[in-house]
Image 1 (spheres, rainbow, N blue to C red):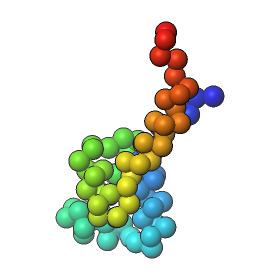
Image 2 (image 1 turned 120 degrees about the vertical axis):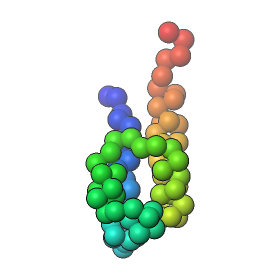
Image 3 (image 1 turned 135 degrees about the vertical axis):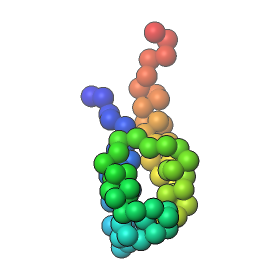
Image 4 (image 1 turned 90 degrees about the horizontal axis):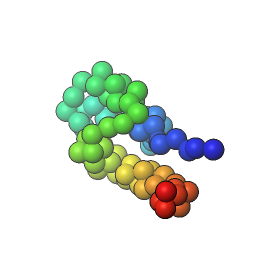
Length: 81
């Protein structure tokens, strides 16, 4: 069974809730409108610089989510083909 890449918007939204923070809080920290944050929640992929910015603001390494995915799947790949 093929494992899907992490849906980053959902991960950000879930982590924000877990931290007890609001969309308004993240929007203020990112100096943007809340509507922009709601758009991020819907994203399946995100600009690397923006992900780093969110990671720093939220003090959580979202890049590690991708690293874990890569580690799990790299051994499943048949690179000899």
